[in-house]
Length: 290
Image 1 (spheres, one colour):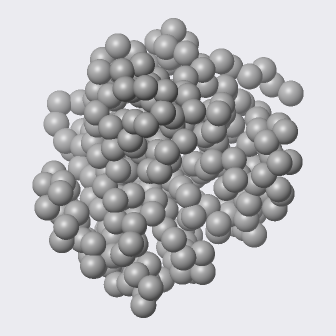
Image 2 (tube, one colour; image 1 turned 45 degrees about the vertical axis):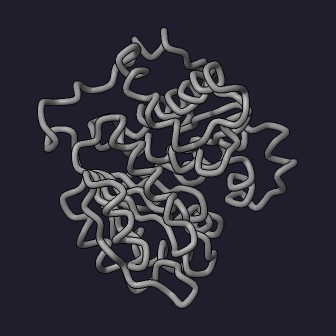
């Protein structure tokens, strides 16, 4: 088994991010497909995180009922309203619109805020095989992975899977206790089966791809708060948009997410800080490590 690299600020100085470029076009385009009627904020958390790591043009595709409010909340965004199901999830019939929106974008993030397992699985199954570049699958969008390891491995797109331990267990058809006994090995197992970069957040953050693996030395229990995973996924996707390859984006993303939590824990307290406070910490962190 290959050695596991411990990730800290010193190690990342030897793996610098690509220069950010002088304008928004040079920092890449990202499409975030997120949210449902009763969870519109997940998309907002993801896109703000992507913008804070320096992504150039970020577009949000979300349910039509939430689109106007999100467009006002983040004036830097282009927001596309998508048709929705009766319970307020993105309709699987929206796949064509998302594929059109993704043309010309280097990365698509799918999943923050999804809440209906059936609608999510149907939508991801429709859209994923038609995407190119890099696709980041987050949260409930990873439910598609559970029964489709080989299909994910055969995709033309590069895939990054961002999961928590419970979602990792579901992707592998195992119990959370089984996965928790050896988080790193199970992350590696999913990475091997899907040929994806897999990053699993929890008390310890780990990243795996092929025979390579990383253990990230930042983070604290306060990150176990609603919306934290949406921020993490947005950081990873934003780094891909600005030029990082999927491996580097996953490792840097896990480090930055954990380090942002560490800064807030020190200033606010070990628990009680909010997910929406995490993105604001990232530019300062990047100035010290990028």
